[in-house]
Image: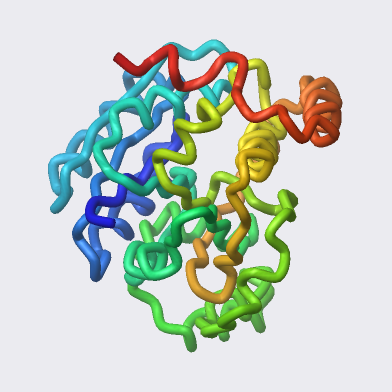
Length: 272
């Protein structure tokens, strides 16, 4: 594997996106590119990140579409169509990475597997402080987070500890739960094999689970990324979940269809 493509999904939160980007700029492995997948931010919010984009030490591209509600699957498909890397890492624009995030995803990458990482959740008050003061969490030590855990400003500390695990990373090859796109790695050819995200999942909910289920149906197995590639996830209000039940029903139907692999409305529509 050579180049890694990091797809960063965002919507109208430039201060969080800046912190996410600065954490990526500080990576110890610079052989990656960044593709910002903007799900319809206003021109005002887009303007707020222009200076940060210009500071990128790696290739960075910006892909966007107009705001028609939550369409993360569609904008991620459009972003992947612009990716030049062999390996994809999906994160959200309100997630902060540690300096070895890219190098650890590279270390975990293996043919025939997708890799879900884990996350540490920040409290609402700690998130506000981090945003208001533009705290560079990617520069903080483990002891810093140990204190924040005692203060209940983060929900766990263990996820920030790196453990080798060995064969334990392979013990749940068909588990689709908790493999979400705030921290998920996979080979680009596997993503294309299943036609990416299915845009039939309209609104918030389960478009990432559907992708993982179809990867498993296609013979791509899970390799656990926890205790290796965590992200720090800023608190945010819940998205509109009015379509959640419809999306969940579609997901449950597909779970029982072992031969269902291809997204009906996927990335192929954006590939030349």
